[in-house]
Amino acid sequence: MFVDLAEISVLAGRGGKGAVSFRREKYVPKGGPDGGDGGRGGDIIFQADQNLTTLMDFKYKTTYKAGQGGDGMGKKMSGKDGENRIIRVPVGTLIKEKENCQVLADLTESGQSCLVTRGGKGGKGNVHFKSSINRTPRVAEPGEEGEKKKLILELKLLADVGLVGYPNAGKSTLLSRLTKARPKIADYPFTTLTPNLGLAKLQDYRTYVMADLPGLIKGAHQGKGLGHNFLRHIQRTRVLVLLIDVTASDVKEQLGDLKQELRLYDPQLLRKPKVVVLNKIDLLKGKYKFRPEGKSEKYHLISALTGEGLEQLMNHLAEVLGKLKR
Image (cartoon, rainbow, N blue to C red; front, side, top):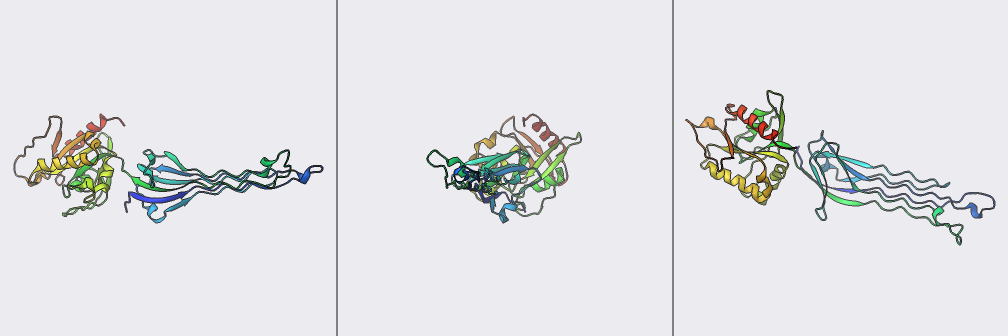
């Protein structure tokens, strides 16, 4: 199951209590204070793991705690620090505080980590409270509470190429032909309900990651259809493939609608390199001509079913990616 949104609670460890203790020594009142400090509470740390691909685990376990600090002891011995809790998440996970939607971390590289909540400080033992007028202090500090937060985890896929198009444009079929991915393919709308990833390999051993993103419809920027669940993942895609069914009644209108939805959700999306791909040319009789909006807009005529035009498309995408900086 692919899960790309989760809500959890995290609680850092509480600091240990300081100790009230006295050493036994001749000619020293009450032996003198020697209570040690409490240990520090453990932190909550998030770490990106390339082996994870979904936030599904956070649907079943929603509360995470770090270890508590140990209490101080006599002979000025400090308590043991609480154990840190490391929470592993997929690469591309955005961590936000629920209360104010503040972004705490954006983990885009494997091994990248971020401290989200700090453990409480350990309390001071009575050795710290000795003074000229109080030679036998019987007080010590309790440990501080660890930080507690409610978080929203949001996974945005990291892909080189994202396939964007209306339902039944042929995105899943194209992904299955260009990669070893095996998404569900059927002749009804919204066959793909969650993104699928595949690795495209060229003959010269170059590779790039391709994502088949769920079908887009008018009003998606307002949450209609799969709405924001779909558009979230496009933000991390380096190149967009705008896939159009060439048998549609108005190809240019569909292309315009796709661009409009992207613009309304996030204007920055239209700054990404785009390749227009017209699919299902096997259903047409004779040649088909398409006039792009601008001279710089590249387009391809393909058939994901028969394989026509796929090699040229793959090479072109690799060329576009090669010109981009990581």
